[in-house]
Image (cartoon, rainbow, N blue to C red; front, side, top):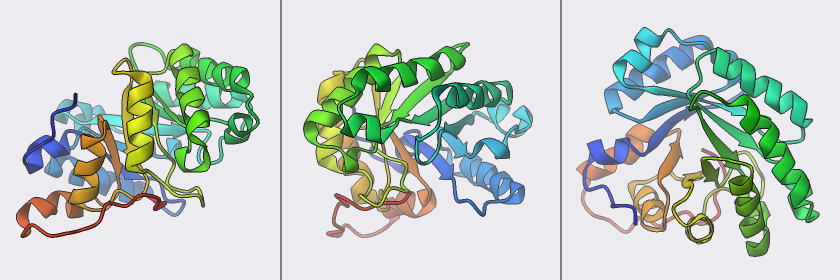
Length: 240
């Protein structure tokens, strides 16, 4: 059972501080790193073209570096995803978040889903972390379970709800609970997409998330400084 964080510092350590907008510049990515250090997050997550970072600005300051692969559609050949992941690792990525072929999952082709993940797993070596984005809002419960099982069979380290770019939406507490139940603590669970308030973040963790993908990290953490309210938890909201 994940312990619910009780203060800003402990919640920050759940966070992949994220910048994946197409218009992002290298200056934006550098600012993200500085903000990530200031906020005390676990990692920054950026597009592959933003890499490499100088380790003196990231790893040597206690900040892991994450990136994405086959993003955001997942409709890339496995060999291309693997090559992208391999290059990102060479460029200093500690973690890679890959997108499955959601259409294959919708068609029940979970052997193909597993093979796709395994190809990227083989490229993410040296103790680096592989997270698998399943676009949970686009899947039925049975498909979520099967996608999580495929990720585990292929050697992934985490399953992740969403890219934040799919029209069906982002993370929900229901999906996070189902994913956490399926992987049973053997894999981590990352909630991303529409997690925009402190209430959202804490609800995801209470339902089994062990990592959060946030673009509005400062606003979420600032919730600890505000009066207790009744902010609703986003169930099906897309976007980081």
